[in-house]
Length: 74
Image 1: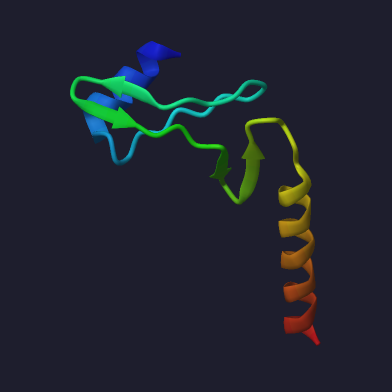
Image 2: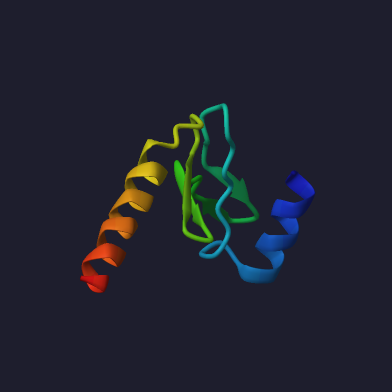
């Protein structure tokens, strides 16, 4: 995991690099002279993931999208 994080960090810099770990508390990391903020929640392809594995926000988001789609059809 650290190898991939280092590659992303060197390619994109500290503002586009966020470590995300499921199942344990995400902490901030220090690389070179920069501090990389760990993220507690991550959105990828419209799905939300949280560090504790909770998918409640993801489900609520999908239900809201469903309701908006139905409203547009009516």
